[in-house]
Image (cartoon, rainbow, N blue to C red):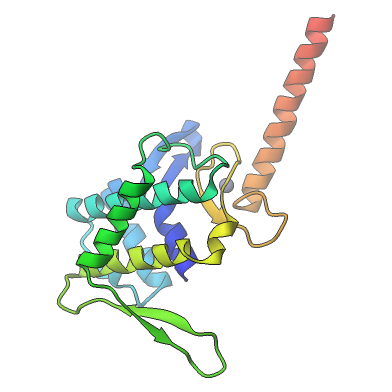
Length: 207
Ligand SMILES: [Zn+2]
């Protein structure tokens, strides 16, 4: 759950394919923000994101946390290249760590160890009930994302190298190169197309 939640937040920066690479920030569009908050609650009912207002205050705070996480994701995949669109605008690692740790400190996230019979131990968490829904949701998302970053799953994190893809993903098997099968197909087509253009150019210059 931590991994998927972390990816869901970090991947709210998208590329619009039909405009050949224009960047769309899901969190900066009121409709996009509402849909995203509802989808998170649908997928993880424990997250109270459906009652979080899709307003400028929510967008500002979520974007701040997301950019800090994108900086840490970029740090995690280095020296491989990060997701490109905002790579030059991200905070440095020290600032990013300070941002996420401040969210956890201010919201008083309290981890507690659980160990159900015949299962692995796990860390769950609580946030104070008097927090408003927005702060609770942002604190919970931040906690999940930082748990992912501190876990061995981080070593499988990759930025998808397919053309016009800006998504981070976690490799599920050894040979996985792309975030999805469609990205793999597009990358192969693009390689074939540009490979031919290069060999055509060589033939033209040779003749
Ligand atoms: Zn991809």
